[in-house]
Image (cartoon, rainbow, N blue to C red):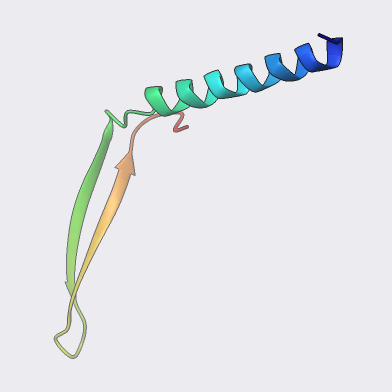
Length: 59
């Protein structure tokens, strides 16, 4: 194999491993979801879900 082919294969493999690592370690253990219910002036009920994360880095 030529050097460019080998280099291309290595880059693709490292990219795949990096994507798998990011997806596996992004577990959201320190995250919470809050549901907020508000009412408009005409009485219409609005339900909104807020995602709160306390993680320093969220990949």
